[in-house]
Length: 207
Ligand code: MG
Image 1: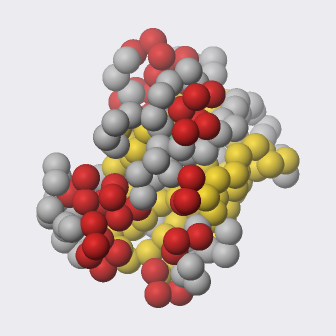
Image 2: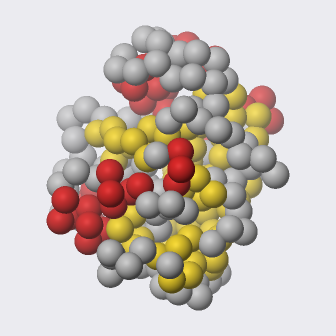
């Protein structure tokens, strides 16, 4: 299995109302975007390594969109034509460091903090308006969310992000996580599934 080699991984914070609320936040007026470094990417089966600096690392199951052609200032109506495919992604987060820093780069940027599954071509996705993400830890469901619950839709996110920065082929947009985030501990196995698309499963170990 080969991972894409993105020039950047753009992520969206607080894009599901219930998740924003569970962490004591409101859904922002406009998409809240941040970057994860490409060095954080791992494939299914590779271990998520818990850094010594954190006492609270959490899973965030997300639907990832992979870009197919160079995208600058795309219109929302045309946004899907820039998408190569869909993949499951885990936006692993050191929650304590996120709160301590204000900036999210350290909390989101550790090596192994971005498991991503196989990219399924958009033409093979049965219903892109009904995509659903599920996250399980040791087989137990922790999160479930559908694109219809997003504060900002995938086309709206692509229009917003590309009004700021050009997205290149292979770049990844992680579209936010639904409610139910929780801790990962050594020995856990965490799986993110995009229903009907595929899943990515990773063991968790101490660094
Ligand atoms: Mg996230």
